Image (cartoon, rainbow, N blue to C red; front, side, top):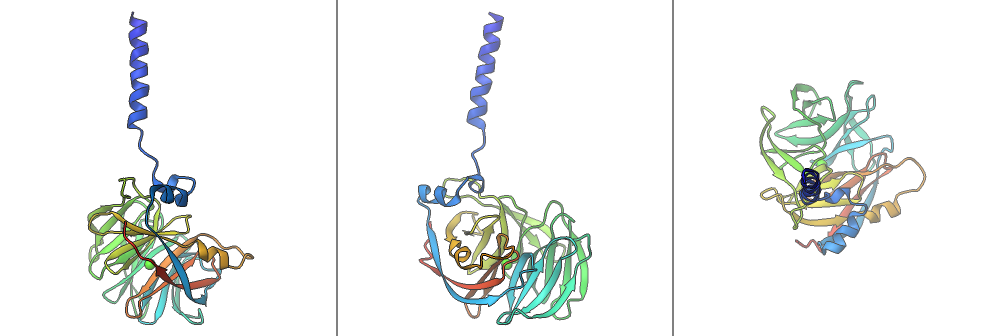
Length: 275
Ligand SMILES: [Ca+2]
């Protein structure tokens, strides 16, 4: 009898664990595009408006547009930097290198200051926008991935489905956005960020896709398919994953590139629907 009760208890445990097992996050599925089409999610296509040169040595981790120029944060220890770049030529106007121990990550410009994250160092930098002089460092726990701003608050990703709201003066977390699709499945691997027309856009690590997020609710507003870019990237060379969204608000231009990509694209979004 005791043995039977033991078996029943074990069976109950197995049943319970299968019910309580968390659902796979979207980004862990084999094909995000298969998942989205099954789910009948809204996926927008793109057209390429312009193509510009991009230094294939740059392991792009953060990309921002500001007053006619692109600002880029690059990663890898020993190769991390902050650059100001002329868009048309790809020419570097200004550059500083990070110390060997740092792995550069997300980048945002706010109040004439540049904020740059590092990946696992748990230290970030604030620079003067014009001179690139380091004003001070700041610290945070966990990993630093993407960074953007709505002009008041900083938004920071760490590779999970959470975006942290950061008060910029003290770099203090003041809120969180939990990003999920319409079925409440978390969307993980949120990487480079850009605040565009009241939405947060994030490219998903290792995927050729951007997710559009409501900053108020964390709801997914739609998806943008960027696979077209891989089809026109040169095959030769060591191109890595897509990473980098920048937005020119005045010109309503969206720029996309990737790690070690030889090109930077200006894209237009078609059928910007909402889920
Ligand atoms: Ca960005």
